[in-house]
Length: 317
Image (cartoon, rainbow, N blue to C red; front, side, top):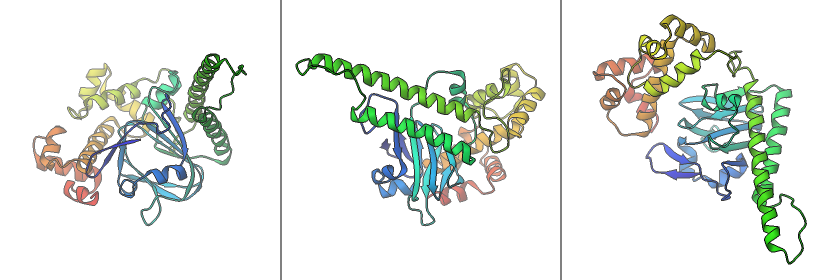
């Protein structure tokens, strides 16, 4: 992970410290903590890669997009690129004492299967609490990923025995074996994502949409492109070729919230991110999100979050 400068939110780009030519890193939370500067550990960060955290023991509290999530045995967190997080911490704000495994990977590393792509491109829950049987299965899955990652990192992937004077052949065999181990890591991560797709979300709905249920994903993709331009359900329906009623019905079925509620929530989230990690004036943030009057933006933000933009910004600093 590589930090870049922001005064209040630390931007972190993917960078494998083991210098492997692969888009995944597997490590424990305990191994991560010594790599964190104290200031970074206490401050929110924004990632440009995916992060899965499986908690096997201990307690802490994580923050993702300004929502707190308790972390106990069985907690599975999925952070997506662009989300703002604060790593699990204890009551004193220090990194929590967790037995947890982290998978850090780029969006293009998993195999390009429909199920894995929907998990990566979708808008599923950040946190799940796995029942014991599922925790055991996920623990075995991340343990296998960890084992293969260590073999790749340590150059221990077994290859054919070569004569002492056949250095070129030995190097070629090692390269082939490393390539195969990299392929295996991709497939193991894909299997883990598919296992996640089978899990119900906290509201009891499947994480993976059934075949043909394309209205809601299409709306969310368009919302990501256009939330700063419009919050109108009619606009989104026209862009996608559906009626407003069909759009709202699909959103309610997928999330329990209407299309209008989702559009408003996405704009409010972007406002929170900008208030937390930029010094832009409140009025400028409002204009960037389509509000011509600062007072209207303030009223909208207070309605969505329960506090004024100024109060929210002060609480983050």
